[in-house]
Image 1 (cartoon, helix red, strand yellow):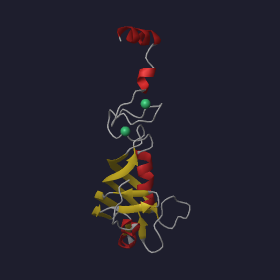
Image 2: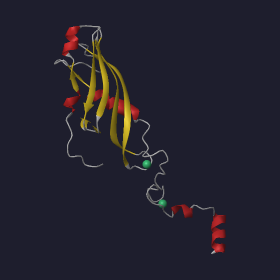
Image 3: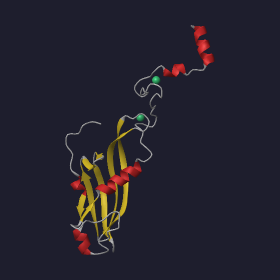
Image 4: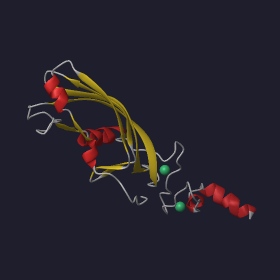
Length: 171
Ligand SMILES: [Zn+2]
Ligand SMILES: [Zn+2]
């Protein structure tokens, strides 16, 4: 993974919705989200997060809806190379207010923290693994050579014995 020199803390993923809480149900607020390289969690960095967000006050909290574009470093599931892939996250989640049992909650200080939601959405979006490219050739199961970058001679050993005999004959 390339070492990145600067990133912003996940504090930028907190949105203060105190004004919506006091405005009451039925009010909504549109905002454009745009943050640079951010450490969302200990195990997740996102290259950027940008896109429109709508925050709507409901009777139980604030509904967050939006289409966020992001990009992350991840291992190709087939060849294990690090790749950077764009991911679109379709967000629709209710952040509950004064409901301790809810998974996503508005904090006492009126902040709504997108970090855990983004992490959950990224996990869902990448749950089946990501390929570095659609036709990734993968690794040689014998010697581990990355077939995208080099070839190896292991495959020769797998040739049908009759073909080996033929090959010897031709040589
Ligand atoms: Zn790959
Ligand atoms: Zn090999």
